[in-house]
Length: 305
Image 1 (cartoon, rainbow, N blue to C red):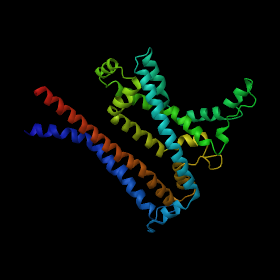
Image 2: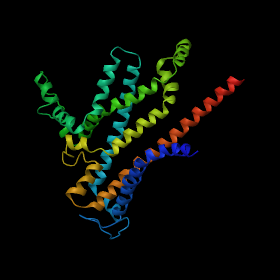
Image 3: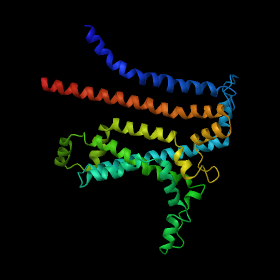
Image 4: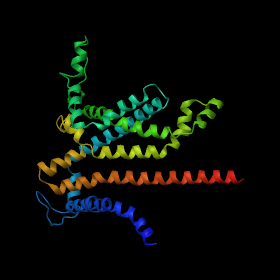
């Protein structure tokens, strides 16, 4: 009896270090950040409580409001483009094309690379005097313009292009794993009934991939919230503050402007969309689990009948 009791405790003992890390490091740091955001801290932490004053100052800061506008624009374009391109790539590879293993590696490889390094290459490509614009003009098109990276109205689109290149491979891998789990009988029945492939994907396959889609959206939403290295590597927040994002605003106030209270308030506000995404993801997972359990129950009833 004792040996069985100890055997049951082994998994909990193995998970204990991770649980302690999550509680102390993650939850503890979030609570500490929340506490600091309600004080008058500057260079060093202070116990002078000021309530929500720092949040009021935060949303009176034009640079912070600009960073939120940029993040919303970036987030919508980045998530939609990554999901669409990743799904189309997964559908393409799911057709059992030749060189499937090579294609999977090629499409997924950008996600494994550090954007600090590849961002410099993208910066060079978008540079109007050395990159794509210069190359096309040398081909005989002197009026060609592609100077988005130095255009205040277009610079965020260059960051979207570069980061979609990096993230779409991850979405492809997730979607492909989901597509490989679709029963072949569904496709055979669709062919017999003459149903177009696009209709099968929209009406049958995508609803079956709800959990996979939710996972991809959670990862992409988290990537949007922590957008920093791509901006720093490509534009440094410029031209001017045209590509300012919340994470860069927080880091600048934390290290350069010595205002850790404002930085902490920004970090807490940046945490909110991530928490919302986690809640939605949990709801989708629970709904998916209930649907699977219901289908299994219906099949058992049919078998017994």
